[in-house]
Image 1 (cartoon, rainbow, N blue to C red):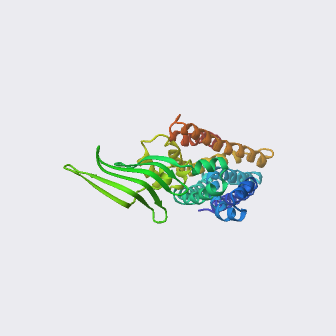
Image 2 (spheres, rainbow, N blue to C red):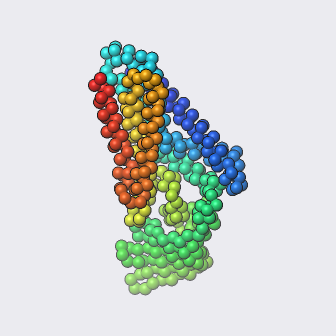
Image 3 (tube, rainbow, N blue to C red):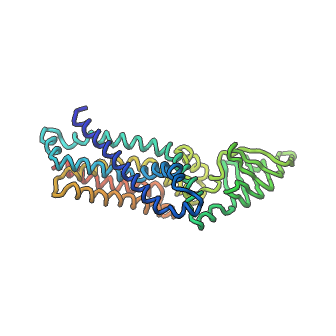
Amino acid sequence: MKIIDRYIIRNFISTFIFITVSIQFLSVIIDISQRMHRLENNQGSIKEALIYYYPFWSIWLMNTFSPISVFLSVIFFTSKLTHNSEITAILSSGISFRRLTLPYLISAIMIGGVALIINYYFLPVANKKKNQFHYQYLLSPRYKNKYEKNQTISTQISKNEYIFIQNFSRKKNIGKKCVYQKFNGKKLIYILKSKNIFWAKKHRIYIFFDYRETIIKKNHDSLNIGNYKIKKFPITPEQFLPEEYIAETMNIHELKKFIDTEGNKKNMNMHLNEYYQRTSLPFSTLIFTFLGLSISTKRKKGEIAYNMIIGIILAFFYIFFIEITKTYSNKDYIPSYLAVWLPNVIYGIITLLFYRNRSMN
């Protein structure tokens, strides 16, 4: 690796870190000022928010706006090189524009690879902490009542298992009039009914109170009655009653398993969008690196300010474009994979045209 490669990689990554931290810092200040009254209404404090919410919220924000951070980093750093005639000197020394791309590509792969690992495994943990605090202290009264309201559960646990609960309290983890059924193919082989069901979160078990258990056999059925019975299921009440953001809290393997298990249900596009986006956002790092490089290596009057404005417009339009396509996907107008990857495809084509035009000049 040449000195110029190390120089570009070092400055690219350091600029990316600086811009990312700056965005987090400003976003936290703005968000606190807007949510202060809601924290007070729900008996929360700014100190608790800074410890238990914003560190995890910042990870989510960093992931969401990572394409913008990468794009602005490339434009800001490369525009300075262009303004100082360093790019001209590099190209005049016999290094081709395509060769100049190599350290940018290495940097983008490094940032994208880290982002991919975070998306797959660490972001869900951060989202659990973030959402837990959000539901407790930051919900509006309207949504708080809706969140804590008893709900009816009717869901498939596995290929051959189903559960039905008439009223389940998310706040107390208690449900009434529960029926659990198990099939062998299309044949019903087991029924468990109870007046109440309790989710013991600490031990991750379900307790059926005042139960009647029926085991259906060929010759005769056997009936058992008791005060309580303990069972384990592979999913939690949060998955029984999936929230808008429940997909955020699953790692890539848990999310894939949940989609496979619940795939026959309607309104699964929200989960599919999250599944595909775990890969598409890190991949967009490559696209925005090449696009930023192509834009910022052309000399213009007031080039740094001009390039930054163009970069901000294109990057925010990308995020807006993703949200629009995901909204249409959630309404089942377009498939999830198309909704999530279409912005990358369109921006990839734009990048290819910009890059080809720049490399030929």
